[in-house]
Image 1 (cartoon, rainbow, N blue to C red):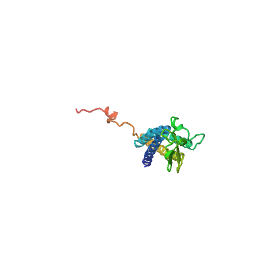
Image 2 (image 1 turned 180 degrees about the horizontal axis):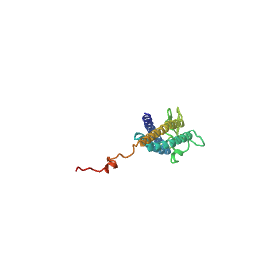
Image 3 (image 1 turned 90 degrees about the vertical axis):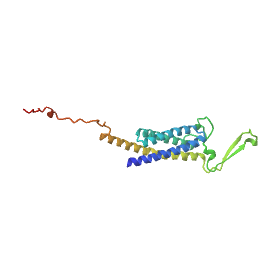
Image 4 (image 1 turned 135 degrees about the vertical axis):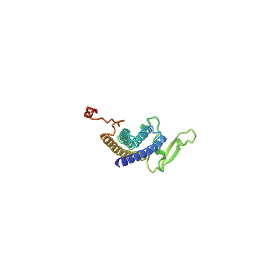
Length: 208
């Protein structure tokens, strides 16, 4: 019963993690955040592997999922520190785009309540003139939206880590108990009834 409830919970967590990771991948693509895109891609693959291992009773796959979950928590802690500018990090740097482009989070221009306005430089309204983009009226700054995303990832990943360790221990105990009672010994194809040796040596009396 414990294994069933633990497996069912882990299956639900993996499915939910997969949905949340796909949602996050979409917004990272829209913001051209290449480092998070790569991290999300590997995360989606490992979560699918963990989901398969949980359904098919494959503890090795669940171990891979558990190790990756710990790394995923560390990655999201880094994202939180990045957007909160902890430890000398700057949210305005191009670190998450590998310095390929100057794009920032998609939420920086499309957050809740944000109004995006283009202001031509020096009052020049010609078609080729450069313009500045002004964002006003945001109900929540984009860095806090990213922090909330990462914090939620940390929460569900910690739950997945705990339940994955529990499911691994239960499956391993069941395999050990099954092996102890001879569950993995080959089943004999035939059985020969051997007579005791003293019966084979018994003389045969012939009638006179």
